[in-house]
Length: 144
Length: 96
Image (cartoon, rainbow over all chains, first blue to last red; front, side):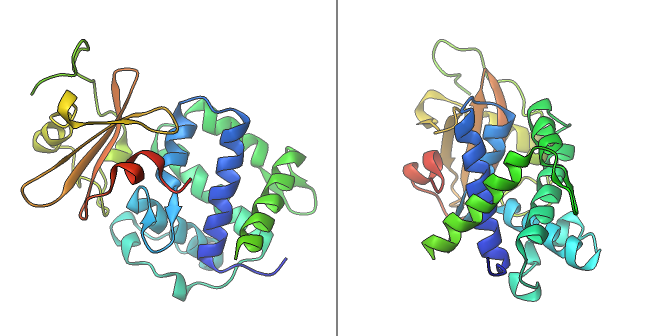
């Protein structure tokens, strides 16, 4: 798999989230999160703030800098480096974790994060998560 | 404000994501912002039910902004605004 630019990586995040939703399509906190994350190239995310939150997660991973909320809308993907699959996964984990914190830690999303926890050299706590992530990347790269 | 027929007025919003200093969000949790959100939840502003189970409401302000609100189980889950109004399809379906 080739490295992804931040937009491609975000499309893989959306594919991953949609795949998880389809496993259990019950309205709730996770469905709300998926709705806000939906992305249309050229138009942006359903919740405009989600795009900036994603870029902030990527920047934090790549530079260690935590971008404060008010200036995240000014972030540009052009200032960020391409992401290998494991890097994009870690950025996705941070992106979801931050949302989970922001909405008072709903159990449904907390459970997902527990399954997603990634240890270098060992993999994800639930091996199925990594398989689904790679499948999401393949789907996005095949659609290019 | 007229509530949705047969239902009590929606509660909330309760989540912090509704109020952020970000594009599409109300910057602060004020009575005015809550009124803008809650006054959108009326029968005439009902758009439909989203693919993920939220009742979607939207209305245009004189400024051209579109206020949108998600309600589930009688509680406002999220609300915000679009500088450029979105279509009904986009409001309900997102990118899927």
